[in-house]
Image 1 (cartoon, rainbow, N blue to C red):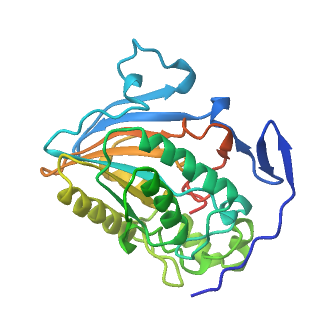
Image 2: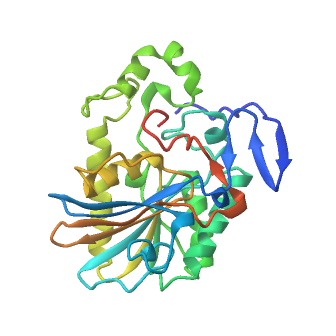
Length: 294
């Protein structure tokens, strides 16, 4: 495994209680530049995709009323709250992570605390699962503590996509240093593996959707939290909404809620909600949470 290379230090500036890296912009969720989605779908069709802007929420809006609160879970479904891990230093400086084990930075820990506080105020959470990579596991531990749960179940099948020879490289340099791996990464072919042991999109899809279905089978009528990665969340979205529009960028510490049934139905109840982040903010480019950065 390639050793972890620290990112070069970046100058910070403080403005309105926000910290900004010099080359990547972080915005507060209070700026209301972010949008998130409510999706209802089955494996066979896509229904009623709505985009809800946080500023436009009104009590008379039946779709947006679902955002920010959790009702009881139907007995024939498992509700899985899937959270992307908090920000890492590698996210902030544009270094590709994959299976390499970068840790949360200070902002990432603030984000984890914010999402933990939000989830702790909701109805009972039965269990917390996590990828075994440090950035996800630390986020999950913070959530579990806030929800009065004693342990986090680690699961390697919830890991980020293995990105082969690209792992550890700064994205803007990857095309020159590992040209074949970079071309494979950007390939539209879903069965294209990445040189250096990297997974194809198909391999990632089957790994993480099977993992979520296993978790759901253990928790019918219950609410659980799964902390994972941007690439995994994009694959889960594809499973739930195969004919849906682009899922957009998956922000650090975003809340994404799925209902899974024994009959194979997947429903996305909430997608990309970062309203809880407040002044901790998030990277606007969502590095590691979009198709072109991992």
